[in-house]
Structures are given as structure tokens and as C-alpha cells.
Length: 314
Image 1 (spheres, rainbow, N blue to C red):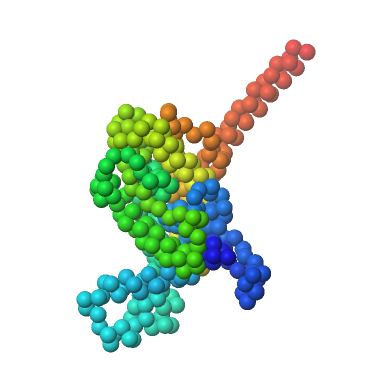
Image 2: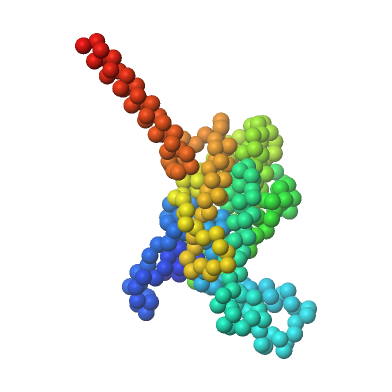
């Protein structure tokens, strides 16, 4: 029930029955829910959230906004204005009626994250995705700050924004007492540099030097990132995803098509010896169908020539 509550909060499922009958409640799966079901990763919800495909649509992380606002205004706290202004994840100082048309902070933050992710190069996307799926990094002796400073400026901005998404998800999971063993949320910066370099075309020896890992550990790290990129790149396309960030959305729209395309490009750039993915991408509308049709036409043409030749001989 705890996981169901979190999925509902993040717009991955929506109630379709009587809301008063909690135990017998039925739900419809949204596009974001379909994305999560298709991903075979640890805490697929967190992966989708970190890719800007889902956010807290119900405002269950509003306590986080209250805490941040209190900390920010601690030194200049005005008790009189505090009594009159309510902080609920929307802009403060706005009437209740006006708030209905204001985009909630979680949705606005997700839109910013999507914009930053779309500006990444495929190699940078590969590095970022590795941060989401890698286990504790065992290479080198660098601190988290050192790893962060080694990233590109765009990657740094993405990481900073995804940290907010991470905090929100943890707040909602804690609210509903989700078991930590089934809700792994992480951001491992140690793997980002070497995965980015490998996707950008560095040699195997250069990758070993950058990472400080043993060869076997490096292969596992790169393959883990490649597998996640392939899965993200194989998600179904949501062509109807709204590009208007001013419309309040009650369902999460799933992975953005541009981010999906970047993941596919990143996977292709990583897919070289000794890191090779035996599973191909699914066919889609990005041009693969055209090449498939051309091959079929070519085969049909050869068959017709063979039949004509046989007829001529007869």
C-alpha cells in the first residue's frame, strides 16, 4: 500500500473507482506508470524522476518546501508575515484563487530538469545515467566534491537539479513509510567521468586510468550504464507529451522523446569492445522502419527477378 501511495503521488497511477474504498480501490496506469513497468532497474520510479519523466503531482513533498523556506528566511524571519503567508509548494504571497492557475514547484522543477537534460551531449547523458544506476564507487580516492568538479558545467547543473528531485522523492517515501530496501535512491558521482569519457570515444587504457578500477569492475560499471541507457531508449514514445509548462498536470507524462533519443545515441556510442550489448533496440519511428522496409523491398525484387528468370527458361 505504501508503494501504491507513492506511485499515485507521482502521477504514475490514477484512481478509477470509489476513493472511499481504499483497500478495493482500482487504478489506471498512466504513461509514466507504463515507463516504470518497462524498466527493469532498481527503483525504476527514481530513475524516471531523475530523467524528468515524473514528479510529485499531489504535493505530498510540500513539507520540504516549508523546511527550505524556513531555513532560507531564518535570519530575516518576520513573524507577522509568516502568520499570513501559507507555504504549500506554490509561490507565496498569492491568493488562494490565484494559486489554482500557478504551476506547482515540483512540476516547474521537473520542467527545468528536462530542459537541462535535453541540452546534454550523448556522452554526457551516459555519464549522468551511470550516476543513477551505479553501486558505490570503488575506484580512486577522490571525494564527492572532486568528482563533481570533474564534470562538465551542464552535467553539474543537471546534478544540482536532480538533487532536489531526490529530496522530494525521499520525502514522499518517508511520508508513506516505504521500506528502504525497496526504495533505493542514489546519485553516485564517482562513475560519471569515466562513463562520459568512454561514451565520448576514449580508449580502454584511458578509461582504466581515469577510473582507477580493475578491468572487471570497469566492464561492470560501463555495462550497467549501457543497459540502463538501452532500457530508457527502448521506452515507448509519448508523442502527445505536453510542451506547455504553464498547464498544471495531474498525471506524469513519462520520458521526453528528446531524452529518449539521447539515451539511444549514448548507448550506441558506448556499445564497443569490451563493452558490448547483445540486445538491439526495438524498432520505432526514428527511421528504423524505413530501412527495414527497404530491405524487404530489395528481397521482393530479387524474388521477382528469380521468378522471371525461371519463367524465361521454361
